[in-house]
Length: 206
Image (cartoon, one colour):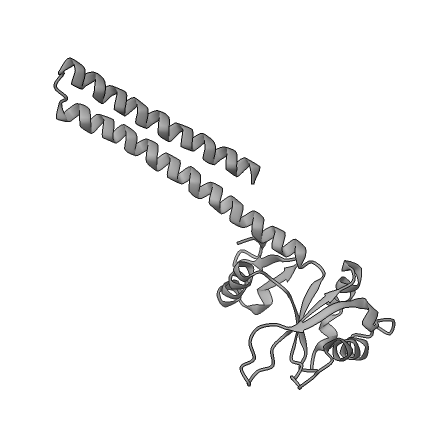
Protein backbone atom coordinates (compact mmCIF):
# COMPACT_ATOMS: atom_id res chain seq x y z
CA UNK A 1 0.00 0.00 0.00
CA UNK A 2 2.84 2.41 0.80
CA UNK A 3 4.40 1.91 -2.63
CA UNK A 4 1.01 2.45 -4.26
CA UNK A 5 0.49 5.71 -2.33
CA UNK A 6 3.93 6.89 -3.39
CA UNK A 7 3.13 6.09 -7.03
CA UNK A 8 -0.15 8.00 -6.88
CA UNK A 9 1.58 10.94 -5.23
CA UNK A 10 4.32 10.99 -7.87
CA UNK A 11 1.82 10.82 -10.72
CA UNK A 12 -0.28 13.56 -9.14
CA UNK A 13 2.79 15.77 -8.99
CA UNK A 14 3.51 15.08 -12.65
CA UNK A 15 -0.05 16.02 -13.63
CA UNK A 16 0.11 19.35 -11.82
CA UNK A 17 3.58 20.10 -13.18
CA UNK A 18 2.46 19.45 -16.73
CA UNK A 19 -0.67 21.52 -16.31
CA UNK A 20 1.39 24.38 -14.87
CA UNK A 21 3.69 24.23 -17.89
CA UNK A 22 0.71 24.55 -20.24
CA UNK A 23 -0.71 27.44 -18.22
CA UNK A 24 2.60 29.29 -18.15
CA UNK A 25 3.05 28.80 -21.88
CA UNK A 26 -0.44 30.13 -22.57
CA UNK A 27 0.17 33.16 -20.31
CA UNK A 28 3.49 33.79 -22.02
CA UNK A 29 1.93 33.69 -25.48
CA UNK A 30 -0.94 35.93 -24.35
CA UNK A 31 1.38 38.52 -22.82
CA UNK A 32 3.60 38.67 -25.88
CA UNK A 33 0.58 38.47 -28.18
CA UNK A 34 2.31 35.66 -30.06
CA UNK A 35 0.07 33.79 -32.44
CA UNK A 36 -0.33 30.13 -31.49
CA UNK A 37 -0.36 28.01 -34.62
CA UNK A 38 -2.53 24.98 -35.14
CA UNK A 39 0.54 22.81 -35.60
CA UNK A 40 1.99 23.89 -32.25
CA UNK A 41 -1.30 23.18 -30.49
CA UNK A 42 -1.46 19.74 -32.17
CA UNK A 43 2.10 18.99 -31.09
CA UNK A 44 1.39 20.00 -27.51
CA UNK A 45 -1.79 17.95 -27.48
CA UNK A 46 0.00 14.89 -28.88
CA UNK A 47 2.69 15.21 -26.23
CA UNK A 48 0.17 15.55 -23.43
CA UNK A 49 -1.87 12.62 -24.82
CA UNK A 50 1.19 10.36 -24.71
CA UNK A 51 1.80 11.47 -21.13
CA UNK A 52 -1.80 10.72 -20.10
CA UNK A 53 -1.84 7.29 -21.77
CA UNK A 54 1.44 6.36 -20.13
CA UNK A 55 0.17 7.47 -16.73
CA UNK A 56 -3.09 5.55 -17.07
CA UNK A 57 -1.16 2.40 -17.95
CA UNK A 58 0.95 2.85 -14.84
CA UNK A 59 -2.18 3.32 -12.73
CA UNK A 60 -3.72 0.20 -14.23
CA UNK A 61 -0.61 -1.80 -13.43
CA UNK A 62 -0.60 -0.53 -9.86
CA UNK A 63 -4.28 -1.40 -9.38
CA UNK A 64 -3.73 -4.88 -10.83
CA UNK A 65 -0.75 -5.37 -8.53
CA UNK A 66 -2.89 -4.34 -5.54
CA UNK A 67 -5.67 -6.73 -6.60
CA UNK A 68 -3.24 -9.63 -6.84
CA UNK A 69 -1.73 -8.83 -3.44
CA UNK A 70 -5.18 -8.69 -1.83
CA UNK A 71 -6.07 -12.01 -3.46
CA UNK A 72 -2.88 -13.61 -2.14
CA UNK A 73 -3.56 -12.21 1.31
CA UNK A 74 -7.07 -13.67 1.25
CA UNK A 75 -5.67 -17.08 0.28
CA UNK A 76 -3.17 -16.92 3.12
CA UNK A 77 -6.08 -16.36 5.50
CA UNK A 78 -7.73 -19.50 4.07
CA UNK A 79 -4.67 -21.74 4.32
CA UNK A 80 -6.25 -23.72 7.21
CA UNK A 81 -9.59 -24.14 5.43
CA UNK A 82 -11.17 -26.75 3.17
CA UNK A 83 -14.58 -27.15 1.59
CA UNK A 84 -16.46 -30.39 2.18
CA UNK A 85 -19.18 -31.23 -0.36
CA UNK A 86 -22.07 -33.69 -0.42
CA UNK A 87 -23.26 -33.63 3.19
CA UNK A 88 -27.04 -33.33 3.39
CA UNK A 89 -28.45 -30.42 5.33
CA UNK A 90 -30.54 -30.81 8.47
CA UNK A 91 -32.17 -28.44 10.94
CA UNK A 92 -30.12 -27.61 14.04
CA UNK A 93 -27.23 -29.66 12.68
CA UNK A 94 -23.99 -30.04 14.60
CA UNK A 95 -21.61 -29.57 11.71
CA UNK A 96 -18.40 -30.08 13.66
CA UNK A 97 -19.61 -33.43 14.99
CA UNK A 98 -20.78 -34.57 11.54
CA UNK A 99 -17.56 -33.51 9.84
CA UNK A 100 -15.44 -35.17 12.55
CA UNK A 101 -17.36 -38.43 12.13
CA UNK A 102 -17.03 -38.40 8.34
CA UNK A 103 -13.30 -37.67 8.41
CA UNK A 104 -12.61 -40.33 11.03
CA UNK A 105 -14.73 -42.93 9.24
CA UNK A 106 -13.76 -42.45 5.61
CA UNK A 107 -10.29 -40.92 5.64
CA UNK A 108 -8.65 -43.42 7.97
CA UNK A 109 -7.73 -40.74 10.51
CA UNK A 110 -8.31 -42.50 13.85
CA UNK A 111 -6.74 -39.71 15.90
CA UNK A 112 -8.86 -37.02 14.32
CA UNK A 113 -11.25 -35.36 16.79
CA UNK A 114 -13.51 -32.34 17.04
CA UNK A 115 -10.67 -30.47 18.76
CA UNK A 116 -8.87 -30.51 15.39
CA UNK A 117 -11.59 -28.23 13.97
CA UNK A 118 -11.63 -24.58 14.94
CA UNK A 119 -14.95 -23.81 13.24
CA UNK A 120 -17.29 -25.08 10.54
CA UNK A 121 -20.24 -23.53 8.71
CA UNK A 122 -22.30 -23.80 5.55
CA UNK A 123 -21.13 -21.65 2.66
CA UNK A 124 -23.61 -19.66 0.56
CA UNK A 125 -27.38 -19.31 0.59
CA UNK A 126 -29.69 -22.27 0.94
CA UNK A 127 -31.55 -23.11 -2.28
CA UNK A 128 -33.53 -26.06 -0.98
CA UNK A 129 -31.84 -28.32 -3.53
CA UNK A 130 -28.21 -29.34 -3.60
CA UNK A 131 -26.67 -29.15 -0.11
CA UNK A 132 -24.33 -26.25 0.46
CA UNK A 133 -20.65 -27.05 1.02
CA UNK A 134 -19.24 -26.85 4.51
CA UNK A 135 -16.28 -24.61 5.24
CA UNK A 136 -14.01 -26.40 7.68
CA UNK A 137 -11.30 -24.38 9.41
CA UNK A 138 -8.74 -26.54 11.15
CA UNK A 139 -6.64 -25.67 14.18
CA UNK A 140 -3.41 -25.87 12.19
CA UNK A 141 -2.18 -26.47 8.66
CA UNK A 142 -0.66 -29.86 9.51
CA UNK A 143 -4.07 -31.35 10.28
CA UNK A 144 -5.57 -29.59 7.28
CA UNK A 145 -2.94 -31.13 4.98
CA UNK A 146 -3.48 -34.63 6.37
CA UNK A 147 -7.17 -34.33 5.58
CA UNK A 148 -6.50 -32.82 2.15
CA UNK A 149 -4.04 -35.48 0.99
CA UNK A 150 -6.40 -38.25 2.12
CA UNK A 151 -9.17 -36.95 -0.19
CA UNK A 152 -8.92 -39.87 -2.64
CA UNK A 153 -10.37 -42.13 0.07
CA UNK A 154 -13.69 -40.33 -0.39
CA UNK A 155 -14.08 -42.09 -3.76
CA UNK A 156 -17.47 -43.77 -3.99
CA UNK A 157 -18.85 -42.13 -0.84
CA UNK A 158 -20.54 -39.14 -2.46
CA UNK A 159 -18.34 -36.78 -0.44
CA UNK A 160 -15.65 -34.62 -2.00
CA UNK A 161 -13.19 -31.99 -0.86
CA UNK A 162 -11.88 -28.84 -2.49
CA UNK A 163 -9.69 -25.95 -1.46
CA UNK A 164 -11.50 -22.80 -0.36
CA UNK A 165 -10.39 -20.60 -3.26
CA UNK A 166 -11.06 -16.91 -3.71
CA UNK A 167 -13.63 -16.03 -6.36
CA UNK A 168 -11.04 -15.06 -8.98
CA UNK A 169 -9.09 -18.30 -8.43
CA UNK A 170 -12.27 -20.37 -8.41
CA UNK A 171 -13.42 -18.84 -11.71
CA UNK A 172 -9.99 -19.37 -13.25
CA UNK A 173 -9.94 -22.99 -12.07
CA UNK A 174 -13.38 -23.71 -13.55
CA UNK A 175 -12.37 -22.15 -16.87
CA UNK A 176 -9.17 -24.18 -16.90
CA UNK A 177 -11.07 -27.43 -16.35
CA UNK A 178 -13.39 -26.59 -19.24
CA UNK A 179 -10.48 -25.88 -21.55
CA UNK A 180 -7.95 -28.53 -20.51
CA UNK A 181 -10.09 -31.22 -18.85
CA UNK A 182 -10.75 -32.17 -15.24
CA UNK A 183 -7.85 -34.60 -14.97
CA UNK A 184 -5.37 -32.01 -16.23
CA UNK A 185 -6.21 -29.36 -13.64
CA UNK A 186 -5.86 -29.32 -9.88
CA UNK A 187 -5.11 -26.97 -7.01
CA UNK A 188 -2.57 -27.10 -4.22
CA UNK A 189 -2.09 -24.49 -1.50
CA UNK A 190 -4.41 -22.15 -3.40
CA UNK A 191 -2.40 -22.32 -6.63
CA UNK A 192 -3.82 -23.70 -9.88
CA UNK A 193 -1.82 -26.26 -11.84
CA UNK A 194 -2.55 -27.13 -15.46
CA UNK A 195 -1.07 -29.74 -17.77
CA UNK A 196 -1.20 -28.10 -21.18
CA UNK A 197 -1.49 -29.68 -24.62
CA UNK A 198 2.32 -29.73 -24.69
CA UNK A 199 2.34 -32.05 -21.69
CA UNK A 200 4.07 -29.45 -19.55
CA UNK A 201 2.75 -28.54 -16.10
CA UNK A 202 2.03 -24.84 -15.62
CA UNK A 203 1.33 -22.93 -12.41
CA UNK A 204 -1.36 -20.26 -12.79
CA UNK A 205 -2.41 -17.35 -10.60
CA UNK A 206 -5.32 -15.11 -11.68
